[in-house]
Image: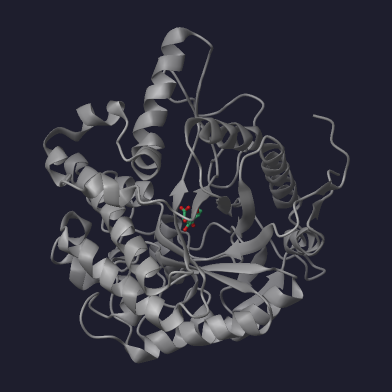
Length: 444
Ligand code: GCO
């Protein structure tokens, strides 16, 4: 494939940046917001590095107007944010907190007033604690409460918000929250993780139906964290092991959503949890989405010797994640071969590096520029192979609360000084701003 720099992306390709409520909003107790499982988890000593929490974060709740003005100055066309369920419905069901709803009204109006398209995620992990107390996502009733919450949001914002994501990364919620336990609510039980994974998909299906019923012109999808799994060697056993791992991780969610059935490799993992699947669920889960959000950070390399921790010749980010843009291209091309894909957005892609404010007051982050350039190049190459890619959201707009790592990892294209809440657009933010304005990618 001969490519001439700059690479010109299709007209209408969406250029944005993403955040999530618990990671940026702060104002954890302001204006009637209820407690989430992440408030509870982060305030439990030992769960988060440096015992950080999201009480203040980037204070986006109070500073959103300036952040929106900054996005406008950066020439961003779209902003993916998440709505804090407990800010809108403090106990997850029943009463509505109108002040919480007002915040999202004002955020959406501010975005639209400067020509930035809002993309709203309904669930980015911050389940109301009251619902965790009745079993959380292991309790099928919660899928109904989630649909009710979706109805509230579609009614209030659906005249202006046309792009909705139901659940962010169900694999992370199921595995990190309920099997590995390093994320809220912090369980370590395989059967629980499988039930949570399935009910998240049921919740997605119910919310998609609810939103489409309330707002027929809405575009609704889900976002999945996806890592291609590649064999350490070409040996048959390495390839078989890698394929199996891909099916029980990526396929675990891609297949139900896009084909209406779990991969056969998943069933031996289910055990008694299979009872979580009710008649009609798979048809509900696989209701045609308007788009699919792909969130890519790294690949997995594995085989009979287990996972390869350090791939020789590869660079790694502050998270210890391999930088492998070509694997993003391979993932997207394979997905396009395996499924009848809806339009695809890269709804998260980015990296943490050891960013510092230099003496000149700027944040020089050449590694992040290279990371973003290489991954956008991979997106372009996938586009040229007819993958239906429609947009890209850098993770993240702002440095923010990186879950169990607290504030120790900086993913933003904008630096946040947490002591002063000052924002400094990093060199990568200025670079991305040029890409977004022009819709073109310089290869050098
Ligand atoms: C995720 C979440 C984000 C993370 C980001 C970096 O994909 O895990 O959506 O909230 O902060 O991915 O880990």
